[in-house]
Each structure stands twice: as structure tokens, then as C-alpha cells.
Image (cartoon, rainbow, N blue to C red; front, top):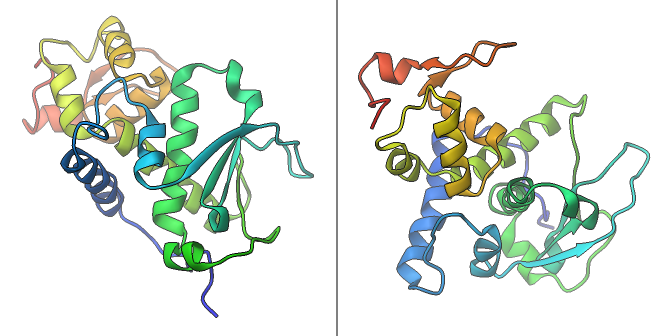
Length: 218
């Protein structure tokens, strides 16, 4: 019998980014109803993928706080209403993270063809874990979220006529993208566009800039 959740596999960053971009391209081809725009509304992606999104109270379990969970057999994402007081960028990231699990870790043919759900058929998302495989799965979903909310070509567009080594300009981009500043900074550092030494707020040009792969000041 096929499993709802796929066997663990390693995804490269390139594979994850391709899958996120592929969804954005498909949404754009569908027409104005789903055409992506920024600030980005992750619920539009859920609608495009026929995923329901509900906000509800999710009590903590023995392992701690639960930010969200995905119920594959119901094709539904459940977000803990306790995060409603969090910034909008955090909420968008949480939803995009769950969409990442659906795309990367759920056997969608099995989920869509099953009529009944059980307690085991859900994916609970939480913070840090001590299980390397689960930690990797969570990282994959979060990297997918970053690629979905902050595509490379959109970041290039928003960086025009801006200096990415100035915090004021980063906060301006943050507002235009509708993300959190920490997610934006992590994405830019991952792309090697900037470097911020740990424990400081000083921003330096990243490897991609030094090597001439992109222009820092637009």
C-alpha cells in the first residue's frame, strides 16, 4: 500500500528552487486570477493547488508549541491562530512552509485518492528538533518557502537602484515583498549577495558580488 508521506530524500537547493519557480510559472500562465504579485499572498498558491487553509487553535503537545500542520488526506493546511499576533511576514512564511511540505513531502496521488484520514496522517511543524532527518525535512520546506516568497528575479528587480549593504534599503525591500526582515536577510545571504558577520549588523558585499555575478547597487 502506497504511503501518504514520501520516503525521505535529499533535495539540492537547485531542485527546491526549481519546484517553487515552476509553481509560480504555472500560476502566471493560468491568468490574472492567479498571476503572482508582490507583496505576496501565499494563500493564492494554496488556492492554485486546491489546498484548503484554516485558522484554528492548535494546543501544544508533549514536544511543545505547534505553529501549523498539514492534513494531506483532507488536502488542508491548519495554521495555529496563536500566530495571528505575529507580523504578516511570519504568517506568510508559515503558510508557504506548509505548502513546501505538500509539494516536497506528500504523495499527492495517494492523498487525493484516499477517503479517510487518521491521526497519523498529518504533518506537524514545530521548531528545532534533535532528529537530523526531520530537521532536514523542515529545512527543505523552509527553503522552498523562501524561494516561493522571494524569487531570485523579483529580488533582482527590487534591488535596482538600492544599496543592499544599507539596512534602510533592506527594510524597503522587506515592505515591498511582504516578508520578515530576517527571512529577507537569510535569503540574500544564501544567494551570496551579502554577508553579515555573526554577532554584528555590518553588511558587506557577498561572494556573488565580488565575483561579478550580480551588481550590488542595481
